[in-house]
Amino acid sequence: MNLVLGVSGSIAAYRAADLARDLMRAGYTVRVCLTDAAQKFVTPVLFETLTGQPCLIDTFDEPETGRMAHIDWARQADVLLIAPASANTINKIANGYADDMLSTIALAFTGPIIFAPAMNPAMYAHETTRESIQKLKGRATTILEPQEGDVVAGEHGPGKLASNMEIVNSVLAIEKRSQILRGKRVLITSGPTQEPIDSIRFLTNRSSGKMGAALARAALLMGAEVTVVSGPVKEPLPIQAQTIHIITAEQMLDQARQNAAKADIIIGAAAVADYRPSAPLKGKIRRSEESLHLDLVANPDVIAELAKVAKKEARVIGFAAEPDSGLETAVQKIHRKGLFAIAVNDISRKEIGFDADQNELMLIKADGSKETSGMQSKLGCALWLLERILA
Image (cartoon, rainbow, N blue to C red):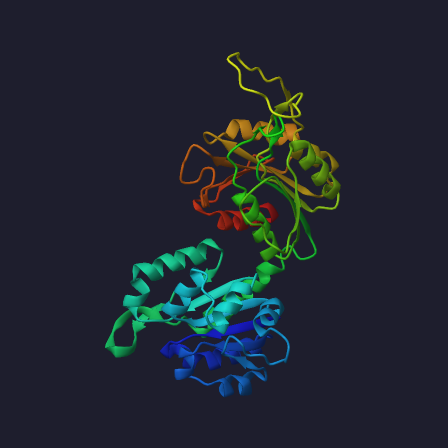
């Protein structure tokens, strides 16, 4: 396993040398990247001697001539660990800045990131730092809370770097999670569908595709090969996933069915339109004073059709967006559609409804058992859901 250890400007930087050694003993190939401020405490020569690997500092460092080191290191690493993580580094990365080699690697890296903060307690408690940490947690980044104790300048409080054992164990846990779906294929439907009324108008819904994108990201973090069949959304999907863009429910079913037989897990997170106009008009319906009546016909039930063609051992999960807890309706859907389980989210709650960044899921299985995720980021819900599906 390859690990990039980012060391930022904290007095705890001196402990990164022992941490690099502990990680190597655990079987990792460790490459170190220092911020400018970190060099006030430790040197590149120290880490190059310890690890036998080059140490990066400047954004334009190129250990291999003609190779963009920040891209190579980001692609080759399995885990990015930033320890110690200063307030400056946390705030920069949380807000997408890339003005040094470490923050540039972080922006290019698509795998799991672990932050081990170490700073003055007042800096750790500052609202800007807390907001940045919450942002990072929402992206399923692991934050190892600092220990409480004596810090520099004679102060006492939460700000000491977590123990090396805790940091190494966190890295090992992340590696274990990344192997859970290794070699498995996950198929996800996401976003809304658009059903044409005429050449410029359509029926649709308020789905943003955020939950589907979170599920794709979570499955990738757990090592799966991911295919997403998505309706029109603004939410970006992970570049490592195979993405198939569609417009209508029938197109979604066609594309998803082509991939369903190979999938080990199928998740129907898309908000598929239940009905479509029976005869869309070519051109534009002109306004008049007369009432306009649309003749609607039922769309195919995408997740139910996918359950029919899925392999016997596959786990097929539906989603139910209900204006309440929707338990009775959800249980009926499980049996009617032939699902392993269904995830219910209450769209009447604005804080977890359409286009929200957070969610709260209730997972109901065919055996009648049910569990609740608690309110958390959609990525956190997605990781929870996949873990519960496999439990």
